[in-house]
Length: 74
Ligand code: HEM
Image (cartoon, rainbow, N blue to C red; front, side, top):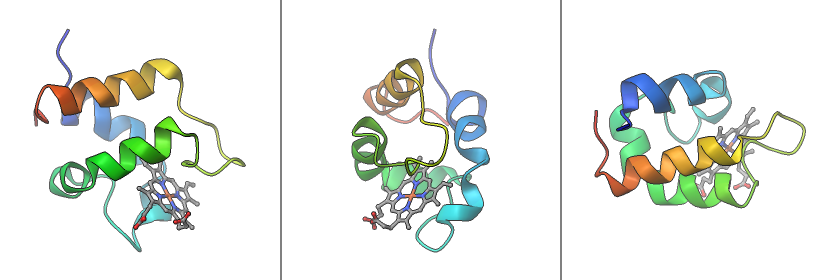
């Protein structure tokens, strides 16, 4: 099953959008694409979301990686 920003990535990041607006818009395709490597690094090492928030599951993290590998489908 292929992954798209609109269907899979955006809903997963939506709840955190306001918290990261100072740096980029987690709801905006271009912003997430441009910062994808850094975002992946932060979620994969469990630095983001910060420890006091619900972490992403391994499946969600793998899905983000798949989205990058498939060249960021909108
Ligand atoms: C309630 C949720 C969140 C809060 C309060 C929060 C807060 C912060 C803060 C204070 C920083 C700067 C400190 C640092 O560099 O360690 C940061 C950096 C970062 N956060 Fe978040 N964040 C949240 C969720 C997320 C989520 C869900 C993602 C990714 C999907 C994310 C991605 C990043 C990235 C990539 C950086 C590094 C930015 C840079 O180096 O310029 N954050 N966040």
